[in-house]
Each structure stands twice: as C-alpha cells, then as structure tokens.
Image 1: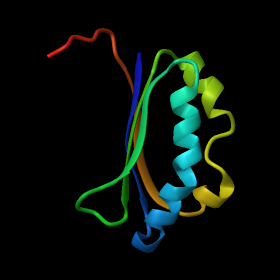
Image 2: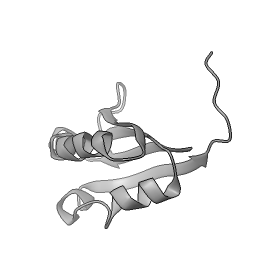
Image 3: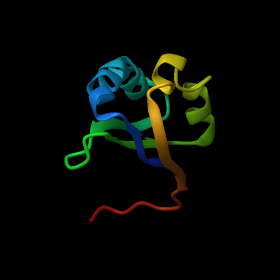
Image 4: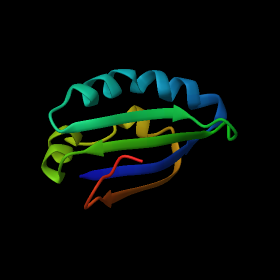
Length: 94
C-alpha cells in the first residue's frame, strides 16, 4: 500500500478556487481502481495551505490514475509543495 501525504501552498485568495477545481478529481480518484482513500482539504490554521492525503493499493494503480498530473491552470496556482510517497508494509486496526 502507498500513502501520498503532505500539503501544497497557494495564495490564500486562491485556495477556494483551487479546491473547487479539484472536486471532480477527488470524485474520480475515489472511484478509481486501487484507490483506498483520497482527500484534499483546507488547512484549519494556514489560509494558503491545502492538505493532501491519498491511499493506493499499488504504484501501478497510482500511475494509472495520475496520468499527466495536475492541469496547467491548477498548477499555476501552486506556490510551494511538500508531498511525499510512503510505502506501507503492514496495517493494523488500533
């Protein structure tokens, strides 16, 4: 399993526009084969931060969904990014 987690930064005035533009992507991801979870959300403290959390069954599933990545109009709004891929070897319920 893979976890993609981190955040991107946009100008505070652009955050709602960016998130609205991602609604279809989130919906598509959650329906994609191999997607276990997918979420983009406004940070509660930083008005320019968007938190990212994804879980995928495999690299192949992630690659099949990602395609060419973020559309240019959304990419132009991103000021900074700190997003990482984590490989999970086991999962246990708390």
